Structures are given as structure tokens and as C-alpha cells.
Length: 137
Image (tube, rainbow, N blue to C red):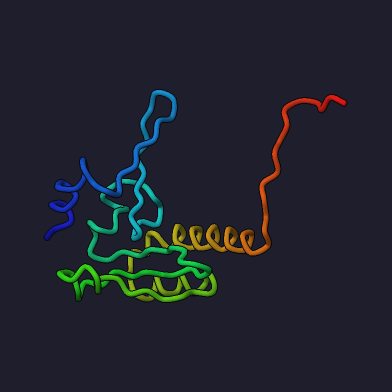
């Protein structure tokens, strides 16, 4: 199926759609694993595109998922996953395989954010409570 047809079918009612209010404006986000930017649009959605890349955290490892066009009719075998150890390998895979090079910077940024979160979780980092104003003694 074409990506435009898939987007027209899915755009108003998708299980990946998340709406969030910000004042009087509603912003839409996506929870699709093949969406690196988490923006709900036909350009970014992995299910609408023939070639897509996803960077996700599974357990204590960061995995790079690449959608293959070979197994389009087999959803279980559609994505190939690989464990990645550095941001350079993410950018290399995205550019080398011609998998949406316009999202190379977003994939590297997502890898760095997930890596930072995993390192903080290993160290037992806890956010400190912030107080407003002076402390009274």
C-alpha cells in the first residue's frame, strides 16, 4: 500500500496517537517505535513509510530497529534489531543503509538521551526536590 493511503486510514484513530493540552493548544505525539522524533505526522510515522529507523531502549541496552521492505506483509519479521554501543554506529547505519538520512541527527540525539538515562539509572541518580523561595529555620 502507498504511504499516503496508510496515513489517511490511520491519521484520526491510531493506537500510537497521544494528544496533550498545552494551554489552549493541543499537541499530538506518537508512541510508534519506528518514529525517532515522536511527532505525529506522515513524514515521521514509521508505519506509513517504506524505510524507517527506530532507536529504543530494551532492558539495559539501546537497540536500533530498521524496517525492511522485504517482509512488508509479515509484521513480526518486518523490523531487524541490533544492539548499538555508540552514537557513531547509529549515524553510520542510517546513512549507509539509506534509511531516511533526514532523520540522522534525530536518531543520534535520541540515542544520546537514552544513553544518558541508562547511565543515570545505573548510578541510582534521583532528582532533588527544589524549593521555592527561602527556607525558614
